[in-house]
Amino acid sequence: MTKQEIISQIKKKESFLCIGLDTDITKIPPHLLKEKDPIFEFNKQIIDATHDLCVAYKPNLAFYETMGAKGWESLLKTIEYIPNHIFTIADAKRGDIGNTSTMYAKAFYENLKVDSVTVAPYMGSDSVIPFLEFKNKWVILLALTSNRGADDFQFFESNDEKLFEKVLKQSQKWGNEENLMYVVGATRPEMFKKIREIVPNHFLLVPGVGAQGGELKEVCKYGMNKDCGLLINSSRGIIYAGNDLNFAKKSREEAHKIQKEMSILLK
Image (cartoon, rainbow, N blue to C red; front, side):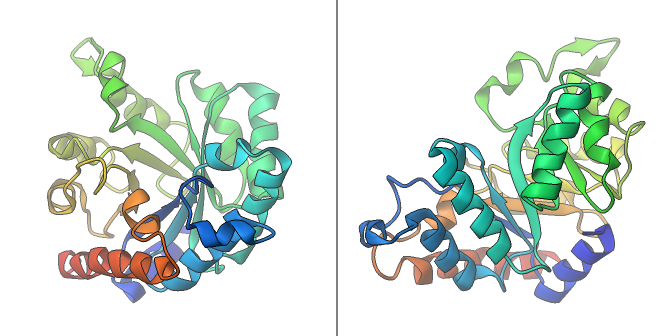
């Protein structure tokens, strides 16, 4: 999927919502457990209820890999079910070097057929460039995350430059705004101004809105650019809004609340 296609969907839907499919079999409605593939059935109903309100879906691979081959099958079926016009993100946080990275990239782009994958930059260009060699596919590079442990390394400073700033600057030598996005946590909205000075035109994938405490208006105030430039992820707050027969309807209601707010912020 191209950058322009993503922007077009944002304008059409008046939304920059990404829904995280962090599907945990211990948390889905009990009545689904009788299904042949409970995980896929849950995802299917969430997608049916929300696909007109979001521009991206982001399965977190850990929730599928923990179930072995059956989990991967559920993931494959989920990706195939998502409408083609919706951006798909494999939240895998891979980060190895050379031929291993190439094999990871093939697994996600050619086998799973997703549009993008999250990648850890710690091993440098060797771990990122192989993912950038696929046409109309995206790397979403971890830059400044929303977890507490982000302070352990990401703010390390050398020559008046923080590590996450180094990641933003150095990675622009490997990719561009047409194939490279960045993960920036919503719990640090004050940092978006600095980030936009370094990467004014790149898309940012922003987790942490809702359950993790991030504020949508604050993120948009500092992080939005002329193309919107944001994919705001919400996972638990949407997919686990209900736990009964009407769970999908409740998920839609939560997604619609966010979409309505986004519609106002886009004007």
